[in-house]
Image (cartoon, rainbow, N blue to C red; front, top):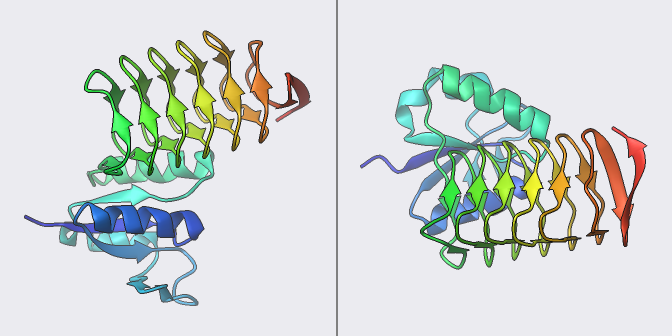
Length: 208
């Protein structure tokens, strides 16, 4: 069975994804548009830019987009789908994922994270280290739940939104699309689309 996995984006986040992939038994090769100025990250080779991956796609069992920016992640994921390159989901062995949760393709669930029963995680989401997604939550595509953040039961998060590190979201709250919750915030009221909210309690501070 082919276990060669392409990782797109050789950043710090990419290194964490690469290590997770190794833990799961994959052989990692990076692709990054900074190539050929950069040809290696730590001990992993960078084999070329994104177009090089498309040329050599049959060498790999799939590809994971290791880029935090949701818009870029969405664009690259669409190109991978058009090229019929699989985007597997990677779940760390120490994560706790309910058998009743739904996690779509291209997601990464990091060490210590929890995804509880009947939650639904959209395409190419990041559930980062020690994040908690409680029961019945609904996350849209390309969402990022940062380390040590917690969503209580029944929370919804719109596509391409970002819940910052250490934030807490009260049960049944709705966070709109393309919104950002600042680090360490406590969200007790619904947050609309296309805004940045911050504080405890979180308040909208600007439009995105």
